[in-house]
Amino acid sequence: MTTMTQTLTSLSRRVVGIAALSSLCLGAGLTTPAEAQEKIRWKVQATFNTGWPALGDPIARVSETLAAATDGRIQLKIFEPGKIVPPLEISPSISSGNLPAAYNYLAYDQGRIPSAVLFSAVPFGMEPWEYAAWWFEGEGHGLAEEIYAAHNIHPLLCSTIGPETAGWFRKPINDLSDLEGLKIRFSGLGGQVLNRIGASATLMAGGEIFAALEKGTLDATEYSMPAIDEVLGFHKIAKYNLFPGWHQPSTSTHLLINLDEWNNMSSSDQALFEMACTAATMRALTTGEALQGAQIKSFPDKGVTAAKLPDDVIQELKRVTLEVMTEEAEKDADFARVWESQKAFHADYQIWKELGYLPRDFN
Image (cartoon, rainbow, N blue to C red; front, side, top):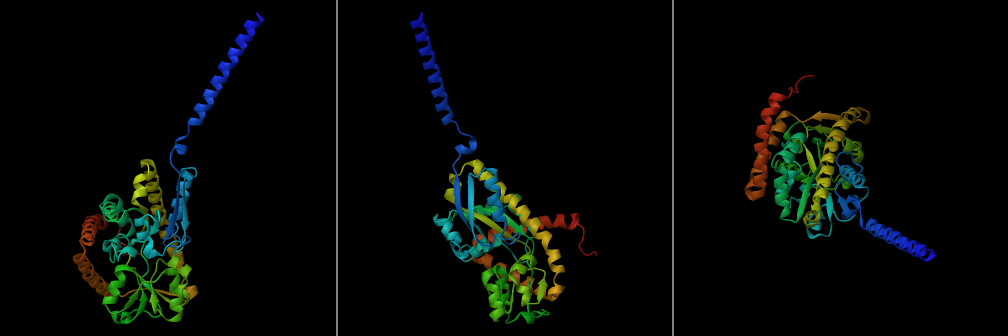
C-alpha cells in the first residue's frame, strides 16, 4: 500500500508540475495589445520653438498625447529649431529617410515644391476655420498627400491659427509709397507681393530678426500673432504694429512623416497620429484666439501703437496679390490645382458665411 501511495503521489506531483510549466509557458507567450504592437521612438525636428503658444507648442501636445494614449509605446523626442537640420533642409531629410518626422511650415518647401506654400498661408486667403474645413472636409488633405507622396512624405495637419499682424514698423504706413524701398522681413507669397510694389522683402529665421532690426539691417518685420511677436521683442524697436494680416489670414503647420515609416505603421497607429494631430489643431486655434486681445491691450504701456492699414493700401495689395497668384499658377500645374480647389471651396463657403454669421460692423 505504501508503494502504491508513493507512486500516486509521484504521479500527482508530475502532473501538477507539467500543468504549472505549461501555464508559465502560455503566460509568457501572452501579451497585451499594446505590448504586441511595435514601439515607435522618433526624433522629430520642429520648425518653431515649442514654447511659442499655438504656433510652436502643438507638436509638444502631439508628443504628450501619443505617449499618454499608448502608455509610452509611442515616444516622439522633439528637437528645437535647427538642432538636427535647418528648416529648409527638413523635407529633403524626411524624403531620404534620414529623419523620420518633423513639424514643419510647408512654405519653406516653396523653392522645390511651389504648391507647398498654399498649404501654409495664402494672401487674402482662407481664415483658420475655413482652411480646416477645406483640409478635413474638402480636397485639402487629399491634394497635400498626393503632392507630398511624390517626395516620399505623408503630411498631417497639426496646427492652424488666426491671422498674423501686417508687421512691425518704425513709422506708420499711410499710403503705398511708404512701403517702397522698405527693408522688411516677410515670408512666402506675401514677400513676393511686397517686392513687386517696391519693397525689399527677405526671408529670415525668427531668432535672427530682432538683431537685424536692432542693427538697422531691417526697417520692419512680420512674423506671427502679437502674443508670439511679444516673445521675440519686436515692440522694443518697431513701435507701430499694423493690421490686418492680409498676407496670412491663417497660418497652418503640419507633421511630415517619411512615407515608408507611415506605410509600415499599423492602421491603429496611423489613426492615433491622425487623432493627436487633429486635437492639436483644435487647441492651436483656441490658444491663438484666446491670447491676442489681452496682448494688444498691453501695447500702450509699451509705447506701441496698434493701427490698421488704409483701405486703399489693402486694395492695392489685393490687386497685386492676384497678379502674383495668377503668374505662379501659370508656372506650376500643382499650384494651379490647389489654388483652384481653394477658390472653389471659398466660393461655396462665402455663401454660408454671409448669410449665417452676424455682420462684424457693430460695436
